[in-house]
Image (cartoon, rainbow, N blue to C red; front, top):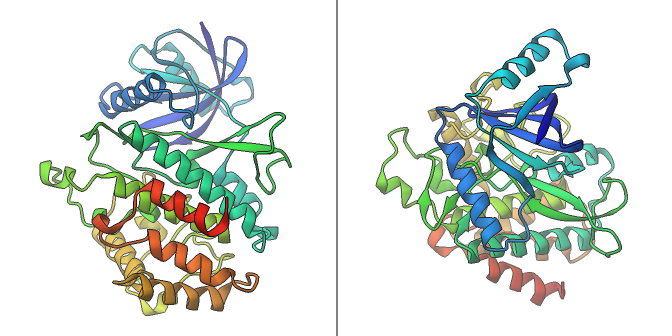
Length: 358
């Protein structure tokens, strides 16, 4: 086995991800510091996915490898070239070698925001249907993702099949796949206290303290994935975050429609300085801001949530006649504040099938 590092493409609190080649084919290599025990959880999840025949998980060529590492840093700035050399020479970094996919959903949504066809709701409903098929699949195998968001959904081209058309992604047909299971749960075994990503967190996780214990672990259920998947579906319809404080790069979405009048919320003191490189680490101010946004949009009953969403859609979006009511009903059904009331993925998938015959 021969791995050549090309360039870094992402960095988090516990890992870094590089473009690479693996036995002369394009690949992605994910490294983690040897002291990060959560890496082993990701290996466990990926092994479980492979053993159980889960078809909606990105392909991993190798895990925990220590193959021959070189680097192709001829076109890198010096500091990155040195980093590649350091990683290539080190025996302290376990890593995973994964298949490289052409797009992730976050890239597509950001790239197509300026001319996104918001009226093409058939496409949006198809995306929601496939996403909840995926969630139902991993849940049926004892896996809870805990960090579902567009950036963790990869797109694989499907040759010769009429798969979901992703607007702006090369005009081809694509299948969605989950990746980044670093904080996932396998068979109710929680591997990490740092669960999920800030803008997608369900309300039950916004106040989890740093002192992680068995009581808090009980909050990590399949209902976490349901909330995160519903928030992701909102982006399929609108190309905007539902709880829109910052985007994934901690930059204010000035060009996007805000879902609430932030002047009415206790978010005046929020700044990009409070947005950590790993957006799962909440400070008290961030937590309060997110909670305010959730409370503003999500009511105590489905009917209240539906009305709030109808008002928001009427102010900010132009869907075809009849669509706002259906969209608001869908999100009111899935976005329940109480995790015990959130329907399972299979029930949400059945709702889409019943209402839209998809």
